[in-house]
Image 1 (cartoon, rainbow, N blue to C red):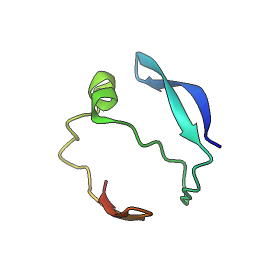
Image 2 (cartoon, rainbow, N blue to C red; image 1 turned 90 degrees about the vertical axis):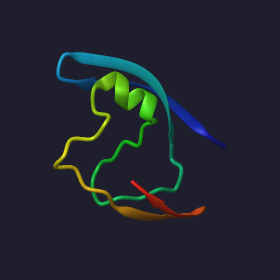
Image 3 (tube, one colour; image 1 turned 30 degrees about the horizontal axis):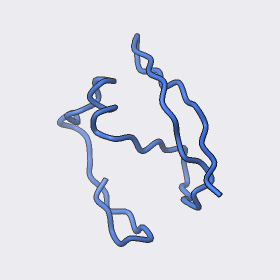
Image 4 (cartoon, rainbow, N blue to C red; image 1 turned 30 degrees about the vertical axis):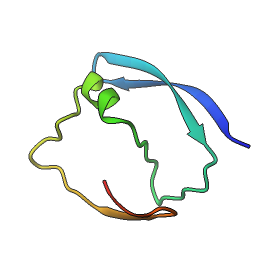
Length: 66
């Protein structure tokens, strides 16, 4: 069963509300929030800054670049 929660995401003076899927079986060493590009643009974090990095994560559907 899918569990969804409403989130309010703050970045500087911007805040957006969205719905997130939780308890998906994804595990990480630190808190992470994967968001669609349209939401990232709204928060002003897309395109990524020049000092950002890209990593490859193994997923159930195969490797994914993040």
